[in-house]
Length: 65
Image (cartoon, rainbow, N blue to C red; front, top):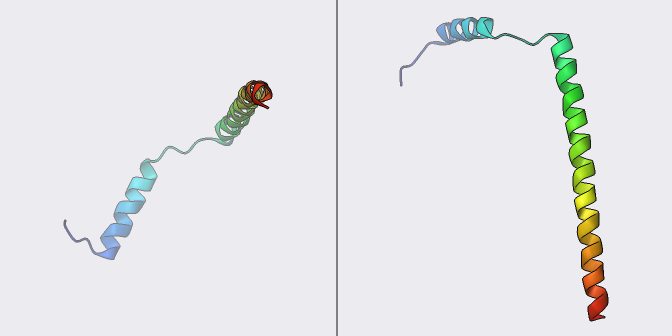
């Protein structure tokens, strides 16, 4: 691996950072809203699945005891 002095490293980092396309504030907000919506939908889905399985287990255990 080639060794690079600190000054050259800083120049390379600045050059690479300049190539980055940063999202706009609107894009960031839309992405955050979509993440909140999707996590809410998934939370409700898994809550429903958990509730169904819980009732099934309680039903099966009622036959034992």
